[in-house]
Amino acid sequence: MKPSRVSIAFLIFILGCMLSTARIVWDAPRPNSPPDSAQGVGRRSDQRFAALKTSLPERGVVGYLGEPGAAGLGDYYLAQYALAPVVVDYSPNHPLVVGNFPRSPAVSPALGPPSENLRLVKDFGDGVLLLANEGAN
Amino acid sequence: MALVLPVLVCLASGLLLVCLGWSRTGPLPSDLLLRASLTVGYGLGVFSVIYFLSRVCNVTHLMLVDLLVLALLSAAAVLAWARGQSANAVAMRTSGADQGPAWFQRVLLAAFVIALCSAIYSAVLRMRAYPYGDGWDAFAIWNLHARFLFLGGPHWRDGFTPLIPWSHPDYPLLLPASIAHFWTYLGRDDPRVPASISFFFTFATVGVLFSALSILRGRAQAMLGAITLLATPTFIEQGAWQYADVPLSFFYLATAVLLCLHDEKTLQASSKPPAGGLLALAGVAAGFAAWTKNEGVLFLGAILLARQWISLREARRQAPQGALHGAKIAFARHSGLLLAGSAPVFLLIIYFKHRVAPPGDLFSDPSSMLHRALQLARDWAIIRWYVRGFFRFGGWLLVPGSLLLVGLYFVAGREDHRAAHPGFRTSVLALALTLVGYFAIYLITPYDIYWHLRFSLSRLFLQLWPSTVFLFFLAVRGLPGDSRSEV
Image (cartoon, rainbow over all chains, first blue to last red):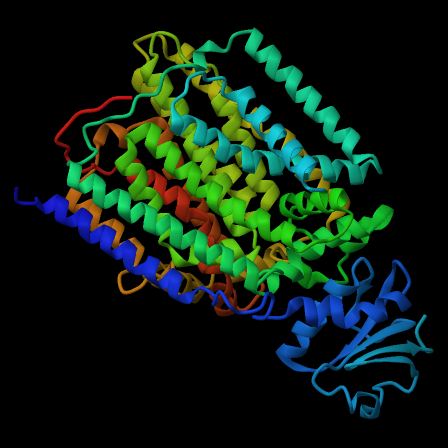
């Protein structure tokens, strides 16, 4: 029996869907890649800030100092995610300030604080610092 | 193992809520699949409401509250059953005329299985590769709010401060509160919880689409609809992103499906109209949509407006001379049920917006909004992006899914009597109004309009996509079959 025009239209439709199904499989992460290897959110947030978190109060607001640019903004979001329920305000005008310099950990203390009132309380390594702002209320 | 109890309680709550509105009896497999798929979304919705209210009231014994709600829902379901809501028990019939010839059904089944397996394969690998979600919104908005709710103790409101406006503290809490609810049982903020919730929302959406089309149009249309959704790369990707757009699309779809089911039952049982349980359930789904994302508030308004408009037109069309008043009352009752279903969740949203969340970032002072709205260049920019989005949406390979649907429509045609159903027309109008509402929001946005369009338009289209696919395959004519079958 000769397929009708409508049958052919349905078959073309299904073929179009199958093409995109192939894309879904093709674009999927490789099965042998280790978990959380794509972005490493856990490594860049929870693991990186685990030691610092124990030094912060259980709640309240702390300040933040980080690297400039879009990547720096992403680091800030990751810091807030790791340090919740403490609120991390993107400003150094708080008695306690989190310093986050993942791309320049070795030089971060030598960068020099942007304010004379900032004092290093503790360097947790890997660019994670706890600073005190003695001029903040 | 620690998650077995909360998962069971969550699903039981959802199932009881579904059964309250839909007391159909009968072993039709599609019916069971539809209930099961709806149960996932409704259960998570109930779980989020319980958790939020527990936080507001400083209740620490969450399990007690869960069991209390479960007992109340069980009692209500038993009462409803004892009162015999038999009007909802109209047997659904599937049209066997458009199932296509046997060879076509075999091709369709093979394509469906391939699409389903591929989507599950991709989703599982994405969950593994991106346990915290892919993209910033997952950990910067939704899972961050969940953390504040879970870890904040009595100070959970700290997370909804204007000090971190980028986290959108005015966004509603269905997703964060349901995640936090499971974390409370687990005792830790395990990233597998939000990942699993996203996974189940993705495939429950497919389940609702497939089973609803199966009931209303038969298995062939159901498989075509499901294949379309499963083959949409953006849908599968964003399902694993842990964003709220796929859950929102679930509730949009559930609302449309329940409205269409109600009206199908009305047509089948013209002598005794069905009880309004399905309409109330549709209202609950629209309420949960508003509790998922701010766009859902727009959809809730759109669906109420559309239902009222279509109902009045139906009343004028159907009522014999002199009986218009009675018909209007009957249709007003139906609109009232939709409103009643959404009201409890909507009141919760009002409380959240006024007592917990700071003002949103989209609405500035009226004069600035008016100034932006009157700039024709903005209208033109949005129209261009809408048109471009129509062709590019979904990340399809070679041929856009939207074009495939348009092509199929022109060749196959539509079933006019389906397109005339009030439920169908209400849903189409509501989606159109929602799209117009999105347009209006872009007009007044205080952000750079191109930046805003670039980072949100495809997700807004995604929210409407499952409902669009459902309504398309509900109305489009199927392939003529070589046999008639009836369930």
